[in-house]
Image 1: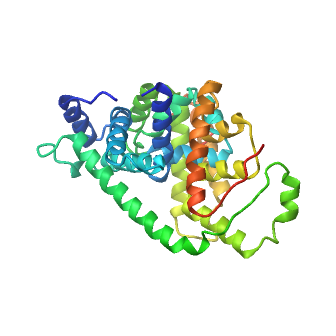
Image 2: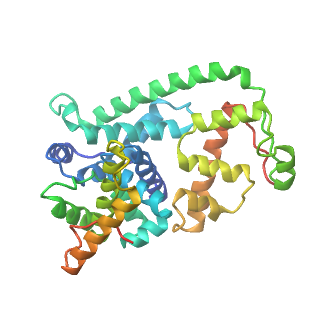
Image 3: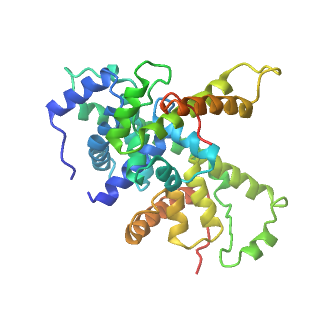
Length: 208
Length: 139
């Protein structure tokens, strides 16, 4: 469990943000992000997609850093305010996901089977300009639902059957970490993205 | 929480901040795209470690036209551990490009390339005077 920032630190940080201190937002994230993520995990124990929690916690902190005057320190502790804000964002995100999943039911039987063991065979099966409408639709939907360019590059590597950890680590910007750490983070990203792809009805065949 | 998980989450926040113009993350992303640099190359150019880059990304962006610009940049650079004059150049360049893109289209106006070339000429004049902070894009 992450240590909780004390009230004096919260007030000082809040004042610095109000005063336009340009590095205070960096310290804010360093002090609160993990705690807010912890709290959201406790509130949403069954949520299997951690990226939704990370996004909600991050957005709450960045939004507060941009507009600190929206928070009134006399009413609520800063941590409670950030958790409340992130909680609201997360609930909205979950509602959006549910609506999207409902709309996409008709696509749920579509499988994008790319045999990563033989990319040349894939090219024959799915030539760039001659893929079927379902595959084009899925690819477009993947781009819409997963707009983060880093995630998209990561998925591209997965589709290409890339197996080297360093290739994924470079995309994530963690190439300077120890290999063991890289492996762990790359695996987390892969698992997360696979879950999101599965919800879209997209299954990537594992390289053997 | 391990240091790895902490770094991972803070890097996540840095990436998420790219879409918000008030954070330096958006400038870093624009600069990376324009100069085709990966994060490691950008960190090298700024003279900092990867962690410095993610910390920098989460700082608010100083106003390039403010009288405090130089002091702001120096403070941020010192705080996260990057080279101040390089950070100043990066911010000047991304601001210039953003301003150019936001300007109304005028066929007689210089192109983005021409605009940046002119900015670079001015920078070289300033460098000759020993003041990198007032400047613009690197070559």
